[in-house]
Image 1 (spheres, rainbow, N blue to C red):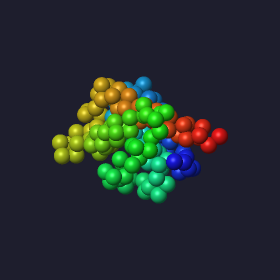
Image 2: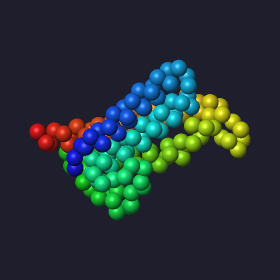
Image 3: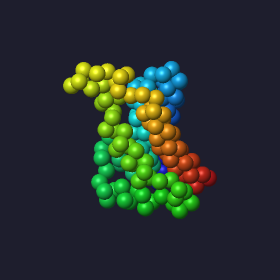
Image 4: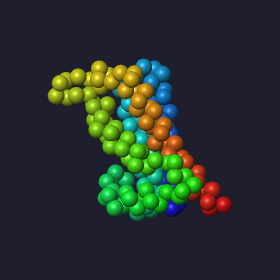
Length: 146
């Protein structure tokens, strides 16, 4: 395990997208808040993958074996980081990525009419959870190097 500059960069981008999601939610732009939260989840997961697999190619789906290896590599001291849940959140929000960005093209409905404050709040909560997991793992790895 290591925190590379690449992994750190993704963690920083996850944080920036989380800030954007909060800002968009405050301005009642629910669709763009959902979109920013979804991206934050993506960047958080990519950051985690890079901490455990320096050869990971961003946006490449990992095999079940690779995911099991990463999950089993989480030290007991930070076993409360629920990586399987974070991966579930990633899969869940990936499903809505295109809708949050472009709306429903077949129905000719913009994203602003599809997402409400409820979805934006849920997406933000999940983005905070994913980012929290990435930061916890990052911070734990950095403290082990001292």
